[in-house]
Length: 366
Image 1 (tube, rainbow, N blue to C red):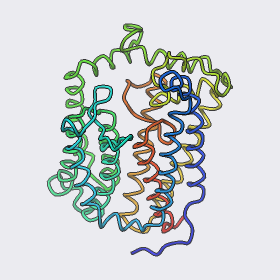
Image 2 (cartoon, rainbow, N blue to C red):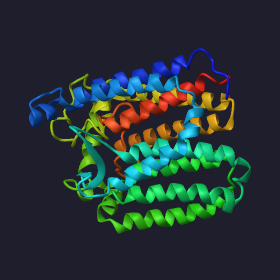
Image 3 (tube, rainbow, N blue to C red):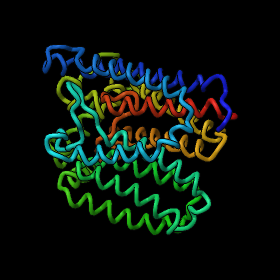
Image 4 (cartoon, rainbow, N blue to C red):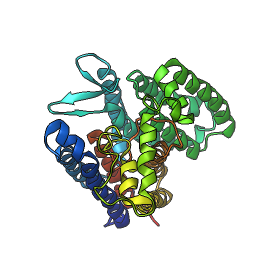
């Protein structure tokens, strides 16, 4: 077991808490009008986000003090439990339907999203698998196929909900981990062609996914339907200009941009804080990813390196997809912006993942 340093990565803590604080402010700013109209409480979403932020921060500091090798010991049990939850959420009466997806399990007044926790469980398990079979990863039958089979089984269960966004993040994170472990490029090319064909089939199999593609290419074909959200997002970003309209002064949050506190919170941030504010958020994420890469490179063993790579890849993919969607560079998917978007499961999961990363930093040499 690696020898532990006395302190974790202080810069990573500051960056995470900075993003979290900005997120809490923006959740209130983006949701106050809608919350007051629907619940007669402008702080409705902000209070719930603060509660999950508090739980997440406590979990982050608690996990920071748990040796990351413990996750290697429990990796199989954790991923089995997540598979059970993915199956349970599909059962009527257990899983709750929101926006056409059966992705949540109700727990009292709150709910959890098992697919979010599967992302971290898959990272933990793959880090164990790849560190133990790193020499076999160049073998398609003994290394690549077993790891990808598990990933695609989880992806299939997530798609039954359906939740293409979360599944895409999990697939992308897993592929990066497997590639870093040393898988052959030739294997990836073959599987990539199959994957593209499968992805196209998934899009064609659901009319609403095809509508998202066409609205991405030309949102004005259906400005009041599939193109509505991206048009309203661009209407928010454009007037923001260099310095923004001012904190709390967004116009699009007045029932133009649907549920602006969730996936499209970056649009409200850009409208209120402008290009400067949006660039500052991207800078904070870039610095966070830089610290994570340093931790991965300095980890004392393969397991720690793969675990850190997986966490950083998950965060990076979500940030790129979310901001890409909000700015019209990618088709609309239900992906939250880490630490900023409203959502208990996503926020708690991200803070837990940072806790694991912080513990690795206590062992890393950099």
